Amino acid sequence: MKKFIVIALILIAAAIVGGRWFALEYLQTPFVSRTTFSEPLMLRVQRGDSARHIIAQINDHLKRDSDRIDYRLSQLLIGIDRLQAGVYQVSPTDSWQTLWQKLERGDEMQFSVTLVEGLRIEQWLKHLQAQPFLKATLRPDNLIEQLDFIDGYTNAEGLFLPETYHYRADKTDKDILRRAYQAMQQKLDEIWQQRSADCPVDTPYELLILASIIEKETGIDGERAMVASVFANRMATGMRLQSDPTTIYGIEAFDGNLTRAHLREKTAYNTYRIDGLPPTPIAMVSEASLRAAADPAQSDYFYFVANGEGGHVFSKTLEEHNKAVRKYQLNTATDDSQGEQ
Image (cartoon, rainbow, N blue to C red; front, side, top):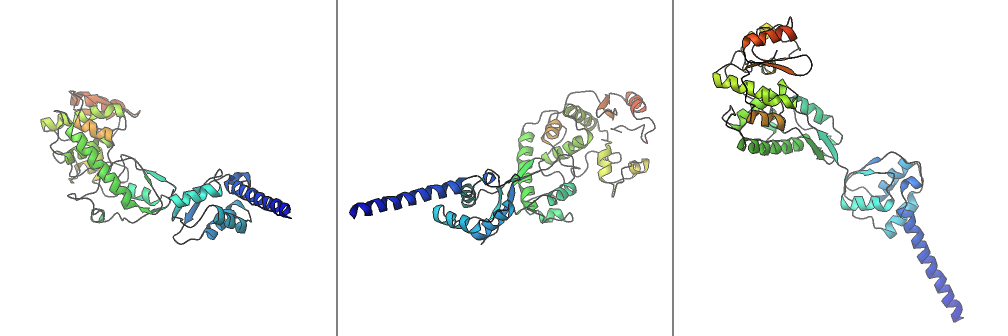
């Protein structure tokens, strides 16, 4: 009788151990092994969501009907009480065990948004508003008042560093711009400290303004320092900058056609009519343009014109420049211009 009891206990113990092993094996098996699951699932976990609710969402995506067993095994063998709210990526190679570990650690999905140089703040706001799981809280009007972390500026243009920023679900456009602003302040201070004796401006903000003009004039890295030299030479001799992009920035509802009338109109941004720099940056500025503004190339150039192939032709005299204009921009509205036309 005792021998029978011992054998029975051994069998029961073996069954328990075996059952636990099979249960753990079940929970550790990748979802893709049990279904045709191929596309990742973005799982939103709200505060207060139960494990049953989460299991039902996943099984609905997997087209499986095993909620009860999945819940019981997870509850008994893993523990599913400390789940953090957020958006999680459930991959085909995940299992119930790795999923619960993600939710316990708060290993949320990381999203990213790339903010591009050369664009205006209004364009950045629209781009941010289109991002998944990023809350849009900012309006274009009175923007500087909404950005309470900005101190001492009256215009938000150009104050943010173009870069790729990562975020978690339910962050806001303001959160992203705060980080971009702090990054620009650090970068601007660093480059200002490294400026050369040829830098033509007196303050970091003026450096930002000049860099924004360079940003809009050329997208070619190898030209930035040369474009900067043209503006530095002009500023050193008291010539006006005569930059189309600044003029365009000051035109309300610009339709893409820059005319002689536009160039004659006196606005705060029309550098054909005003001396020196415009009052604010005219676009978002890359580090490359900042460095070009801080350390212009040494040249005798005072003029440049687009060559029709994405680059520019640089000239020392107005006569040379006008020849280049006639060659590359025949019949343009401003063939006697002194900037890039």
